[in-house]
Amino acid sequence: MEAEAAPTPAPGGGCSVSAEEIEKWMEEAMQMAKEALESIEVPVGCLMVYNNEVVGKGRNEVNQTKNATRHAEMVAIDQALDWCRRSGRSPSSVFEHTALYVTVEPCIMCAAALRLMKIPLVVYGCQNERFGGCGSVLNIASADLPNTGRPFQCIPGYRAEEAVEMLKTFYKQENPNAPKSKVRKKECQRS
Ligand SMILES: [Zn+2]
Image (cartoon, rainbow, N blue to C red; front, side):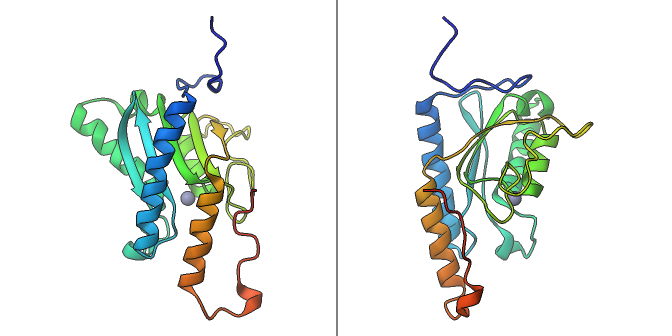
């Protein structure tokens, strides 16, 4: 029997995950997001899992590094590359069988990076209405873009409400005196 409840892998991709795995890894991604929140960073946490092993793990480090590109996914990708070096494996053979779990829809930049690295599957929490690259603003995940890596499958909506709550908490503490008109209207509304 081939038909399973598990999500269908993307065409050409080499990764499928069970509901149990999603639950387990999203819990860990949420912990990373909490850590970001405690460090006064935009609370996004991310995990890369290859062969049931965490090969990369990251959370936003933008404020800490003063580098606007240090999103959770970019941090995790760097870690996964280190893991490949240490274990003597080629990144391409690892990445094309790696699932990425992240608490918020990857932004346009990260979605493009995931595509270039040929990651086949992304599981995420809430949508990213302002920068989302998996359908909210642009659909980098499935767009027909020649010579730009490979489209990837997305499974959205896991623990979306918690992810949204953390973002709201962050933006409140970040700028408690923001004039009403500048308060983010539509952070990550999903539920
Ligand atoms: Zn990003």
